[in-house]
Image 1 (cartoon, rainbow, N blue to C red):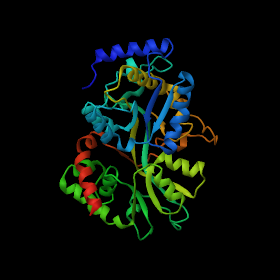
Image 2 (cartoon, one colour):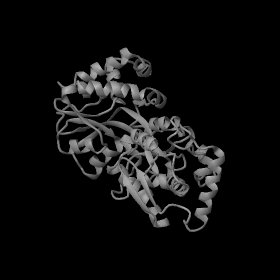
Image 3 (cartoon, helix red, strand yellow):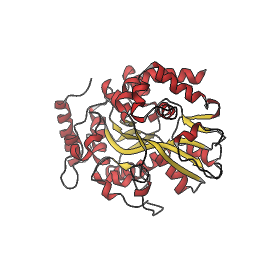
Image 4 (cartoon, rainbow, N blue to C red):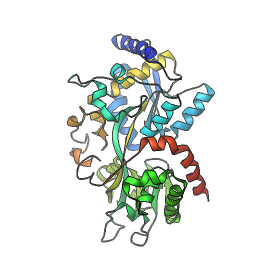
Length: 368
């Protein structure tokens, strides 16, 4: 059951009391779930390390975000929730909220205001897509390709993924329907504005799977965000999808012969939820961490380590240079005008409604 605002207000007072004194009424250890790789490292540097130094608590990292919905369902069923704060994409947050597995957050009670006094609700604005979701970043899923494996004509269209004549070799795609189904329909002639109307139908879903079937034998399916960058670095694929920040890491930090294909990049949101079912002490700690980790400066700090746009309006002007490389991070953001000339807007509500059914169909197709 979702927490009521009355209980949330009471919890906020508990948190405030804990912040004003030693953290005696909060748990001294917490498990934070995220995605691993370069992304978890950016959170470690921007959020976890400063918070542990401030409070003296121990943060345990878990890299199970890709399985968050299924695992939280199982934990709730067993009555044993072992996670304290979980990083999820927006559509998964909506599902968890609808199922009562994530607690509602009142942004103006539980999140810090901007430095100029702007309320958290106004600072996050339209990115607060669920009552249970605290957005951290705007990111995109897009493609990287090996510059030394594409000949004299580097790809400029996302549909190059389906062109095995011009670009022979293996390609990597995520082992789930999201994004793959949309790209398949776009590259099968469906207009961008019609994609989700088509994908609502059984015929449209089959159309997408049929298009994907044309390259099925050439695909390495990935589950972790670090997979495609590694496959590209090793030269095992000519191109592959992953998150733009992971590609930034392999291109700029590792100096691999890889380039970014921004065409039809899919904008999405990623952020925190707090599971329901926590003890009072663990809930107080989770809320205290969220208050700290989602303030204006912390969200800007994450962009020093990875090329994702911070979710707060007040954080954007504070994005500067990479902490180690010293390069300007703004041109590497998915929202940069040069990168955002042809974007595809992810439909959170569609995938919250259809994810389970299309997942089952997609996994059955993979097994054929």
